[in-house]
Amino acid sequence: MNMLSLRNIGIGLGLLFLATLPLWMQHPYYINTSSQILYWAIIALGLNVLVGYAGLTSLGHAGLFAITGYTVALLVDAGFGHLTAAIAAIALTLAATAVFAVLALRATGIGFLMITLALGQIVWGIAYRWVDLTNGDNGVNLKVRPMPFGIDLSSPSAFYWATFIAFVVALVAMQLFVRSPFGATVRGTRDQPRRMNALGFNVWLIQFLAFLFSGFWCAIGGLLYIYYNQFVAPPVAGLQSSAEVLLMVISGGTGTLLGPIAGAAIVIIIKNVVSAWIERWNLVLGLIFVIIISFMPDGLVPGIRRLWRTMRGTDAAEAAAARASAKLASGQTDAKEKGGVQ
Amino acid sequence: MSSLHLTLAVNSVAMGGLLFLLSSGFSLIFGLMRIPNLMHGSFFMLGAYIGFSMIGKGMWFWAAAIGGGIAMALLGGLIERLLLRRLAGQTLPQVLLTLGFSFMIADICLMIWTGDPFQPPTPAHLRGAWIVGDMVFPIYRLVMVLVAVVIAALLWLLVDKTRIGAMIRAGVDDPEIARAVGIKVSQLFTLIFCLGAGLAGFAGVIGAPFLSIYPGLDAEMLPLALIIVILGGSGSLLGAFVGSFIIGFLFNFGQAMFPNLAYVILFLPMVLILVLRPQGLFGKLGS
Image (cartoon, rainbow over all chains, first blue to last red; front, side, top):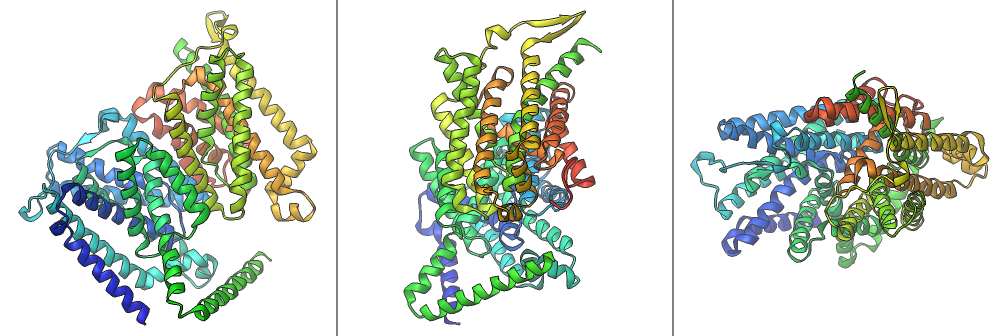
């Protein structure tokens, strides 16, 4: 219980820190970097619904938020209002998500990953090759940011606060999702799909809905992406872009609420710092991937939580108990798997 | 048949042969190890670069092609032995590890060979065309197909007629039982990984005069290998063979007829297969 309230105080302080950030962090560069971290965090939270809670690793999510970005930029360019463009972009992204989901859910595990990768590459291919529609390699500009309720978002701090509000909404939605019966069924399909099926749950439908939920937050993140950058080009939709978001989720810790946010901060900060000094961001990205996967496979947030527990020292015993029960649980799983095979 | 269509058809068959060299290794690795090796496009590109650096130093074309293949086989073997092996049984981390390496290889290529695309010349003894009536067949395209067919035959002999092939098939069908009867499945992993990586590197050199070499070639070839394996069924050489030629034709005809949507057309058969026959044309049920 103590642990829980400590966590809540920590989250409260963190949000207070983020809410007041432009007031004491004057330099626009830092405020803009913080905006980037927050909208990437929204996308990473969306992907985490699939990777962390549903156990389905997607490498095609960049295709989804790129669709949002392109739709907004192209519709505004064609003379539509910002509100229409945003609604159409979200609707189109959700439709694309549904198509992705129907195809990718034909498989699980590695097959799922391969299909999402291929689908993401289709979106990239359209962005790159369908020059008449997407302007190809030159990308599409968005001339002005929207002015919701007449508020001008052109200054870094105004945009930061708008992003922050969207971020808080996303965070609350994730918390509600994790706590909800729906969240529990999603985790259920991840851990025990056969049992869930036997209990009368429609595993396919649950995974499909989780995919849509994930796609929705990608769309929201994609809106902020296009408003922030005011430019979208084919690399946004590519495999590397998907891999960066996946790295955010994995480095922070999959299936945790705060992991993707920490991961987004780490990846964006390293990317900005590295890009300022050398051109070799890809090399660094690849190295981080290899190092994290080889040495810290469960990500930073679970790692730090473990460290925290050990440092508080209360629970050498508790940890041992947890290990024992984990072992017992995995033993049961083994027994069940064997039972399933026979 | 008009001459445009003939040219497209010849190019399609040549491309299909090249894609078979690329995707057969991918399919074997995926079938045996259950890893979609996301470095496969990188092996293709790095092999091409290395091969053409060798030719630049005056080496004979075919020696350079084999050299590029051997270099990639060694690199693949090292990564498999030193890193993938440590993650045995954890498929997802293995895949992501290969993804991390693909980024590093892409960036290292950019560093060494710069961002300029370059088109290596067709080797001198393979230039020119073979003319039958009023039909023209460029010799190099025919040679590419011939090489692919020879390698397909050798692979088929290896997998279907040799003792090692029997072990590989046993490992694909049921790794646990294969281990239980004394087959060293983990050594097979290394062998297959080296073979697949080597074939991809070899294909890179052979394909370079046809496709040219440029940054991003890896990311273009990898999805092709993916869709071919989804089409043909994982671990099936026949599937990789048929899938390669389907994609070879769609690639060339699609680009000539619907340049805007060429990429989408490429993926349509994959979508159809997923809906109608998710295990692939020649895949086994339940795998």
